[in-house]
Length: 312
Image 1: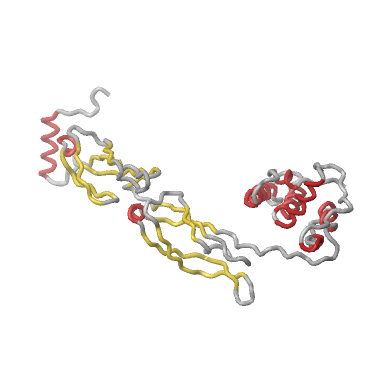
Image 2: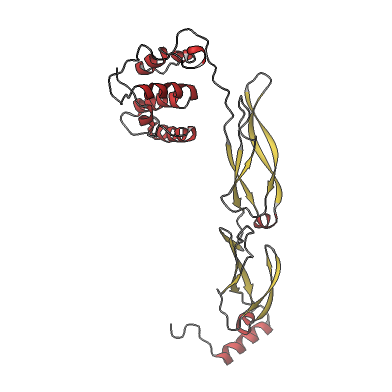
C-alpha cells in the first residue's frame, strides 16, 4: 500500500492554517466536480480531495496524521504500513483517536492508518465547532459615509429549533454604518453568522454605494458634477454648491470651459486621511423656448461671431 501525502493532494504547506486548507479544498473540489469538470479523472480526483480534506480539515485527525509524519519521513507513493507502535500515547488515555477507524472514506490507506490508532480505549470527543461566518452586502448612500447612519436590513438566517434541527427564518437586523466607510469595506457583526455547537459565526457586510448620477467615488475621493450657466463659465464668479458635507461657496475662474475641475482638499469621504472633493463644471444652456430667449441667441450669433469648430 502506498503512502498518501494529503498536503500535496490539496496543494498546501504542512504549516497551512485551517482557513488555508478549507480555501484550497473548496477551490479544487469546484474545479474537479464531476458535474462541471471536463477532466477524465474528475471523479477519482474529487474522491482524493474529499479524503484529504476529511483528515486535514479535522483538527484531531490532522494531529494524528502529523504525528506519524514527524516520526517517519514517508513520501507520497512510498510503500506504507503503520508501524507496530503507531498510536500509543496519542489523545486521552493513550487511545484518543480510537474513533477514527469508523470514517468510511473508501481508502485502504485511510482505513489502515486510522484503524491502528489506539485499541478500545475511551473515545476522545472532537471539540464543538463554531458556526460558519456569513457574508452579505449592504447598499448605502454617499451621505451615510460622510455622517454615519443606522440602517435596517432583512436577512434569511439559520438557527436551531427546539429539536436541534437547523431551520431558516426571516429577520431584520439594525446595522450601524460608521462615518468614513468606503466601497468594498466589510463590517463585522459578531455572532450574527451561522449557528454552531460552540456558538454562531460572524456576519460580514460588504459596503456598496447606491448609484448616483451626480457623484463618482474613487476610494475616498469624490467627483461631483456641477451644472453651471454659460456666463458663469465665461465671466467667472462665486457659486453655491450642495456637497455631501454641506453647502459650500466656490469661485469659478473667468474664461473657464465645461469640464474644468475644481479641487476641494479634505472634502471627500472622511477618514484618518480624508479624501478630496472634485467639482466637475458642466455647462447647461438655457432653452430657446421663448421669443426673448431666441432673440438673445440670435444677437449672440450675430455679434459674437463665434465658431467653436474654427481651426479644428
